Image 1 (cartoon, helix red, strand yellow):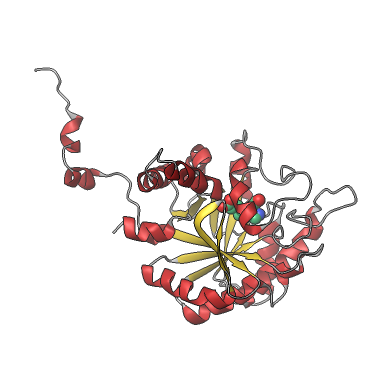
Image 2 (spheres, helix red, strand yellow; image 1 turned 45 degrees about the vertical axis):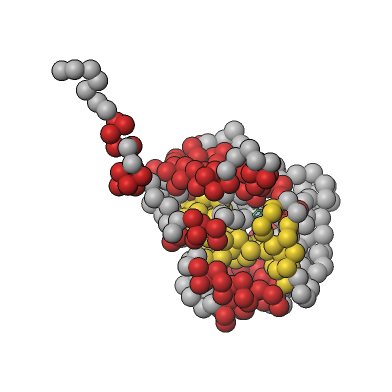
Length: 324
Ligand code: PBG
């Protein structure tokens, strides 16, 4: 037989052929759009480190939620920037907290839009850590669980469909499941930030949410980037404690972890394409060095190909246009 026998290029000839044989397909149905809700009035302020993303005050949020629902994005993920921060993270668990108010609004103006609540204390503590501190400044695990469960119950009472704990305390999934059930919220699901790494790529988010730790870092609770087996252990623990969905975060630097988790667990798997992943592409695109749309689609395709079912991304709204 004449060389070459195989000509894989035959199937790459036209856009239609490539479309037919694509092994991975992105869909609007996979998307979750993060939103930053701030105290105050009349605010729609662009986040300097995240071009195209905004902080919204509650009085401006309604039309934005309606537009997201109209576009067909299935879910939003709420983060809060309270007027005041304190040692007890009051803004996180108070029934008048900004996220609780946003959840109630969401269920009014866009009842079918899934409301996911990020459950963590770092946006609400005066020191910016994700829990209560001891005298040495270390984050206390078990006392923090009490505030996290209180926060989760307040979010569920305000209408959250999904509670998403991002704090990385030990035992939080079991504690939150127990508290939700005891409060009558057995239908509220838990999306665990199961393997969340201490990452440089959260930088822009911390500007957006004003949640950079005042001292130290989060390495005492978030995972260390070299560890793969530990990620599986974290995920399996959370599954055993009652997680309904699990997440790997960040996404692009952890594609191997996404694949490992996909192979090990049958639950829906989310990946969070975090602020730094977004802002790097935005900055390079603004300089004319990469094409934003192609870079976004390529990275999200790789995250999906690695095994993620659900994509949490700041490009969710753009994707509704790009994938059409
Ligand atoms: C809260 C939280 C963070 C992010 C999501 N939830 C910040 C952090 O852990 O410091 C980061 C999201 C992003 O960078 O887009 N703990």
